[in-house]
Amino acid sequence: MFLGVVLTPFTHDASINQDLQIEILQGLVVTKILDMQNQIQKKRQKELLNRYRGRVETVRKMIQCSSCSFRCSMCGMQVEESSLLNTSRGLTFCEGCRQEFEDYQDIFKGKKQPEVFWHNTEWQNVWSSWLNYRRAISAFTNSREFKLLIEEMDGDS
Image (tube, rainbow, N blue to C red; front, side):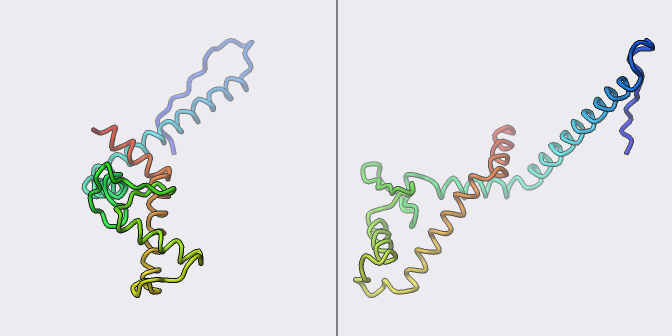
């Protein structure tokens, strides 16, 4: 693919090796091609960002709201600052969800048997699935693509 780059010798000085001139020119051409490819890729990313702006905002809000330290990580209830209960995993729970989560952990680790009738297999599956969801959210927010998306969004603001 020819990109319209015109190659002209640096000098007609016979003392400079022609092979060296060609090697330098080839290096410049490759650099120019890579630079143009990067510019094309950035332009495509920006176009996609603009085309899917509403969806991008949705993803951003989903991540931001699910990570709010003033809401219970499980039920979403607003938690007063004075009663914030954080776990070692960085999750914030209201009092009720914290108790349920602690029960789940103890039952899962085999430290105790279920004490109430609703702590059945399905209840355990809810907590297990929810923890997998939280891990997926965390992995996504740590991904290179998500960080690039946030940079692009912040750069557009």
